[in-house]
Length: 422
Image 1 (cartoon, rainbow, N blue to C red):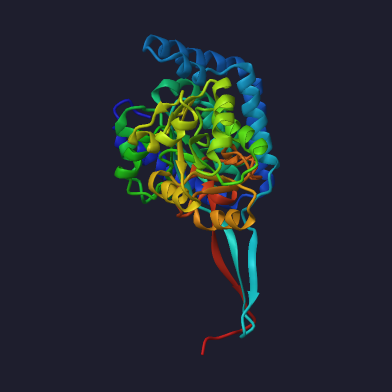
Image 2: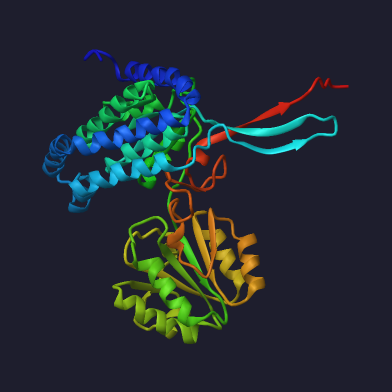
């Protein structure tokens, strides 16, 4: 790379090379892709000291820039984090390969056998912040699903990301696959993102991972389809007659187990018939977990310690030990609240009534809808995907956690014995 090469020219060159690399990668057999992933895991373990040294440069620079303790913690590569990255890549290698799978074969009246075959998307651009482990995780999923990937990480992790990407590229070459199937844009200015978002001839999909501001900016500027996930305003609705013994621990888990993640509950909706018995008990349990409640007037009737809720609370993703609580007159009112304030992420109903449970499943429009379980289950591993590249709250072309299958599409195939159209 020439020091005088413009950011736009550099990004186009990287994306063009990724497009060329995507062709042999898409044709590669499962064993070659798995060999590359296992070699990557081996390289991460063998070069742990090098990775920590490069990461130390990022940590030192981040501290000098005044990054928060939480940000520094997300940035840091420890021996345990490196082991987790390597283990995660080996887990991806062990997953079934979706590429080439044939689905829904049906014989037409004319004898033609018609089905669909899974194929890679092509080239995926991933724009992300902070965590250098995303470099390894995202690249592993893309390689296993036959997609080339162009990575653009944040400035705070540039040395760490470059080191990890180098190990990935070496592993691809050792497995006989094109190293340009994994590329990292080495410049961290905004111009690099803007340039990437114009490469519609070479890049087939953009996946941004980070805060709402980053994702909205990418979606507004991109000429390439974007998988969006703005925020997780997740709800639990406690139905009339719900089992309190079941409902209290589910709500505490949904809010307090990891409050800073997108599948944590942010609003609790309670049927007015359940409120007198349920709200005092769940409030006590949530208080013990350090959760602040912000409630409507009817909530505060049963939980006087709750802070009065404001209109903006209903649409807020707190990512903290804060929970908005609203008493509603019916399940219809709960579903209307979710339609008004939800983010299509995750919703749950706690109920003993089978009919209402099935209606909630049918009518609530989110990427995961649960009955009698915590919202925290909206996660690729928990839902049986093995791993995920992120959660989509759009419906084209994936809705919910995106695993290997969601990083592919299908083409029609037809097998005949001389049919002609009449």
